[in-house]
Length: 342
Length: 282
Image 1 (tube, each protein chain N blue to C red):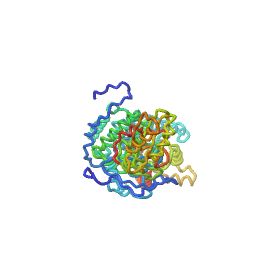
Image 2 (cartoon, rainbow over the protein chains, first blue to last red):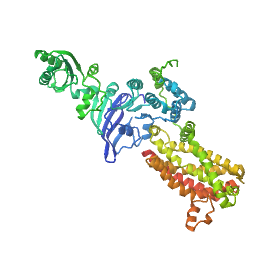
Image 3 (cartoon, rainbow over the protein chains, first blue to last red):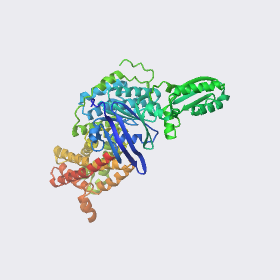
Image 4 (tube, chains in turn green, brown):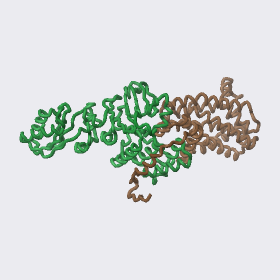
């Protein structure tokens, strides 16, 4: 179990699931290293949940193969079930039962004796800050509380692999941060986490490797840095003093940097996406050149920042469409803080 | 915890990652529960649900009482001269009919439950697969027992005097509950097979009404036309009603008991595997 630090927690080859005419999962290959958080990023209906359900032995694949810690998910489903836990998009606990009853029930099903089950349930409720709500039916829980009880139920026995299927969908930012803390604590103890999400910043925050999936296919895979590098070296964000000069500045940046330039809603702001093909020059060198050119042309730059490309941009570049229209995209200044060695 | 300084009820206590980490360090796993233990645990879940929603006992209390009263006074005078005489014949039969009818709710509850997220969790647990369904039926067996006791009490008040005494009555109820447990696998199958609660209800009615009414529960089959007698005499409900009636009257009808047990085994053997196949494929 814990000795399996190297090796793969999940390995799939050509995984397929069809529902009628729809190929929900259309040949997915994944290799998830043990002991890491692996992000599966994609919009609604991309096939994330279907993939997770096949890996958690809840759905039978129509094609391809999947192994979890070396066990085939179809032929050795029972072995797989012994090592994984699943937290679904909706709370995978019994809404009619109280928090304590849910945890005791599941602990009993995992083989704990009655006293041990009660102790474990109480400890988990305490750790998750749910002691006060322990005696309340889960249907009266808030969204954040449901998530907590749900994750608590998943770690009654510390699993080797935890599936978190969109664990923060519908949560307010604070609850989301708390779920992230929990995930980090779980991973720190050696559990592998497969996290599906449609939030780019979530994958950015938690995952060490990310697979981007769309229409049932993996369209990109790699570390965060690799994915970002694949779409370019980064972005230069500029704020000009005079909005009138914006068109001229954009033109200049396009010519000198071979960059894609985007006018921001703010009439003085510009974003230039640096192309990786510009090659030998680092992003910083390119940016320096851009500033020189601008100042030579008499354009005053009030404010300047250099950012890594956000996963939003990665997604846009890969799929040609946004993750969601109302994106929760990380801002450029936020990206600049990321250390990525691509 | 002394951190209960919450200003509003929605304010949540913080997650304590340090104690969480301690809990996660413990990696030993207890041995898996046996098939029986897992089933009993699911049975416990069914009881917890009754505890939280006691209204659901309505169908095993008020409904059976209503049936006993209705049929005793509606048919009693016409069929047996007086309600008091008729109830001697009717009570075991109406008991069988009501309990077999109540089994139908199993399908509805499986159907509504299966759509919930918790089933994904149950299905991803390393336990004996049928235990979820067996747990349901164990909980339901309790409901059937309750319904039987309620009806018997009403019957005794109305003048039912079982010749078989306590032993005969207990044996009759035990046989009835056992049969209902086996018969319910039909409903678990429909509960998993059909998409909506309404369709489960509809199909269940189509099965249950002919099966319970076309039997010897209300009258002796000898008054019926030949083709109907052929059906009624071979119906599992007729065999069960005769067996329960016999047991409560004090004669131990070995043949009818054997028929009832045979049907029970058949139901489990056919519908049990179909249910499990659907459950695994859901």
